[in-house]
Image 1 (cartoon, helix red, strand yellow):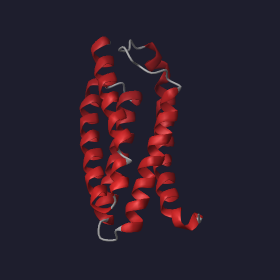
Image 2 (cartoon, rainbow, N blue to C red):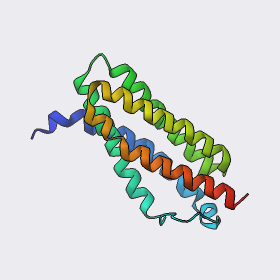
Image 3 (cartoon, one colour):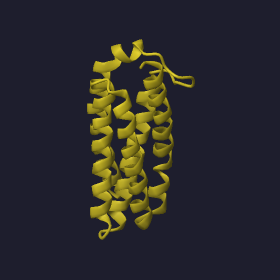
Image 4 (spheres, one colour):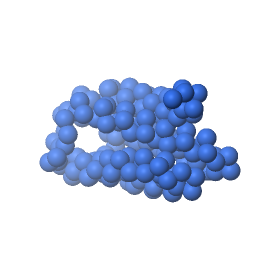
Amino acid sequence: MKIKKYKYQFLFSAVALAFGAVGGWITMNGMDAYEMLRKPPLTPPHRLFPVVWTILYILMGAAMGRVWQKDARGRTAALTFFTAQLTVNLLWTLLFFGLGMYLLSFFWLILLLFLIYRMSEVFRQSDILAAKLQIPYLVWTAFAGYLILGIWWLNR
């Protein structure tokens, strides 16, 4: 196995992880307020979130790298959705942890879910595995929607 073969997967994973690092910094600044909130049932322990998000960022980056390598024609659309969903994801972190705008962050998450779904569909046109690698991201983000709505409801 040659590293060169996977250079785009590593590159795009690094980009996604960089977005995640900025989001992690924003999250750390909002953790005191988050810890004081009432949370819905099934809320995972806070130490689980960085582990899950690291895996998800690696999967989305690896998927984007696969598409980049395989389909020169589909690169632009794939890169557009990849970048858009990363940006919306980062802005969600700012809304939720940075500004404490829980209800708005729920509706923002709906936009994120749509972008993840569209990114997956664009990926599917080039590489079915790249699309399937987004399933955990979709599921986790939908679960986050439950958590966010629950936090808003319990703390209004």
